[in-house]
Length: 366
Image (cartoon, rainbow, N blue to C red; front, side, top):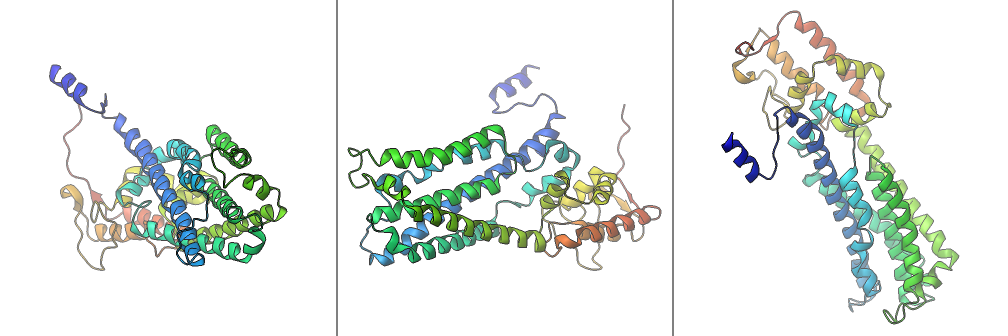
């Protein structure tokens, strides 16, 4: 008693009962990992695009050190884009709580670093490179028409493109539009342009920016350019995401479709009919290795965990089925997931009548 209370008082977190760990890990732990991954990748993306525009502009100025953006606006870039991503990092839910608790195999996202790894960062940088290329290309094409009011008029134009693209990116990355996020996202868009108008008349703060924001927004070409740049960014993001879903989907993508009602009802029923514990073991790869999802070699002997005994040919068949059921593998396209899953579940159902895995012996419950 006393020792336990002292341990609780000294701990950062205390859990009253072990059964609370189920919801803490499978639901809130997974949500937290997904949210933090989105926040980190978002910060990589937006800072990479900003840096790319400044890097390219240095070639135009022969590396003289001239900044494209007004000093205060350049320094406030992260502050301007700070608030909406905080709500995504605190409230986002990629899959509903009920679905997550019914499908414990989704916990594999954290075990395999599915949302935050080196390839994921590389893809984010590649998307930032393409977005930066679109901004630079359009800015170069409209350079003369955007510099009638001076250098900072071009800077405000490109800065506004960056702001609107990042707002779009945040809208795409958010899977759950809560009321606070919805309100702050729209208010953030309005307040940005109000800030440009107000800051244009703060002569004591910045003499160089006096009247620039109002003059820029009074130009119809500014709004037309914003529509073109943001539209090009939307087409680029949608195309890349569509290609990813078609050729390299993940287990999370499949359950997102099911959770939102876009999936095949027959597939959902078959998934639900299969035991949750078995699906969790398969997703985590317990029959092969508990930490890495690998496809077992053909004919290689595989042993069940905990000293389990297996009937003749039973475990080899189960390991093969696990590999085909594992939708985190890159070679399984989204278009074939229904066919693969149906074939796997039918083979498993027919094999259960013969060979089956015998669980390790356990003492009877009192």
